[in-house]
Amino acid sequence: MKSRTIRKIGAAGLAFSLAGCATAPGQGGINQAFNDTFNNPDPCANNARNTGIALGVLAGALIGAKMGDKDKGAILAGALLGGAAGGFIGADIDQRRCDLAKVAREYQLQMQFAAITKDGRVVDVAELDRSQQASSVKKNAIGSVVSLQDDGAGGGHFETNSDVLTRRAEQYFSAIADIYNLNKAGQAPGQQADRKLLLVGHTDDTGSSKLNAELSERRARAVADYLQRRGIPREQVFYQGAGEVYPVADNNTEDGRAKNRRVEIVEMTNTEGFSRYLEERRPNYHFYRSTIAQAAPAHGEAANAQAQAATGGARPNHSNASRPISRQVATPPAPGRTLAATPARTPASAATSSSPVAAFKTVGKPIDFGGTPMVDARLAAAGIGKLEQKRPLFSLISNAYADDVPVLADCSQDRPRITGAVKALKDGATYRVAEHVPGLYGKSWTERVNGHQIVINKVAVLASEASLAQMPEMKVYANYDPSVNRNPSPDVTLRPAVNTYLAEGGILYRIFTNGAAGMQCVDILYPRQGGAAAKGGNIVYARDNRLYVSAFKPVIAN
Image (cartoon, rainbow, N blue to C red; front, side, top):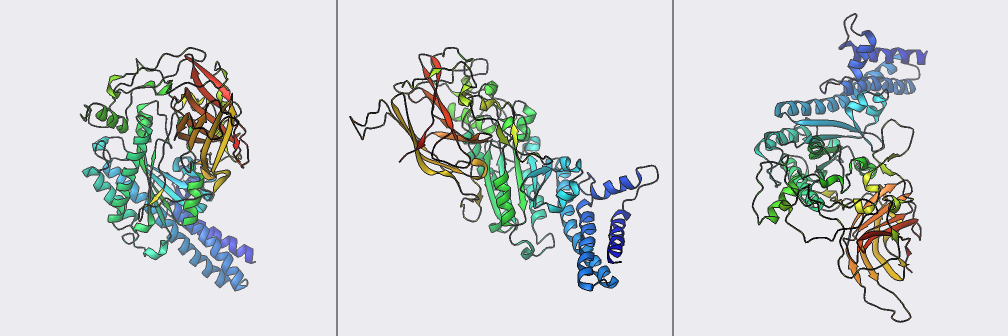
């Protein structure tokens, strides 16, 4: 009797949810009504409210049945209370998305919506709406992401090469801030005291990666400040300059680059969900371009800033980031070919894609590491396997790996990709979410290669996303012989840039040596679970106008 009553009440709740969306005969019937009620693509549809009512009715009925011992009145009361609570929570989600969609229409913004699942993954709403698992995912979502593309229309979000919001951007960010302001939304701040709002600035991959990261951080901070001034509690707001590290589209096209230049607002209901989201983020590695692919003219604002500096402060002759300027491009020769001598650097505005300069150079006295000619471009990546990337939502595979990523071919085709840390607006402190990988928490690693001792100090990698925890120090002692001199001076001392990648075979720790002693770059493959010895690696270096590769497998120094 109790189960029959619960089923009837559940059906009644479903019927109540469907009542406002019934379709005329011949226009889809009950199936269409169900989709319109729970899976409607219109941002102002009441999907979340209706789902909340249906689930609330069922949950309330079960609680009422348990407390009322088969009493129909208790079951009905529980169902009504559960439906009201579920509807209230769901309606707030629907209203937020609807209000943001209205702002997008009013200001003609390119705005994308996504949900954050209970395990921290980001799912585009359009993708979610096509899935049969949509209701379950929405029910368990722990946050949302709103992405605003800066396509230059109407002046874009910011003044050119600046973190100053345009007048138009101030208007729509004011409207957006009011939507996220719980007081103006009719909610007491205590209802979501642990809420987190993260502002993330993104760029395309043209120009200097360092300048991209710095500019995107200043811009994310500017938007965060603006939201705080509009009434969002300061302690709830965080910001990050992600630069070029998290692309969502192909940087080989102008349309793709425009999509990558964006600001994201990430809203999480609590600290636990916020940390989980940050730990589960994965770049789309397949959108990373090799240095060969970047032989096209640059379009990004960081490139504009470079050109301005190179020309004595004169501003480039264009009004926004979508117009191209020329820049110096590093293009390696085909495998097995000799290298041209590296010319002196020229201003960024003087080089074009039709006249690239050689990427390989030698700074200081070259060192021979006893390697073999690099005739196969993939030799340097041997044993690394595919790179772990952003995971698909609906998959039975726990991790997804990117196929044919150009930067994986060898480190000489890659470049440093710099991203800023997540910081708290209240004090600028870095938000840490993970422990270090065992063995990669500031230890020194070393190996002797062809008689030359190589030492890498302060190797530190965080377990989440295998992100770099600190910059290392690299030293090379040429022809090292401790019996002759136990405390020699290093022939090479560097504070190199590093990229880290999660791969099938382990954590790829990629060091950019910028031609020191002929070294172009170094790949080290560390075990994902830690250990005292690297799984493998290579040194790519130039000698006699050719590229060579030498195996490199360091261990933790005693």
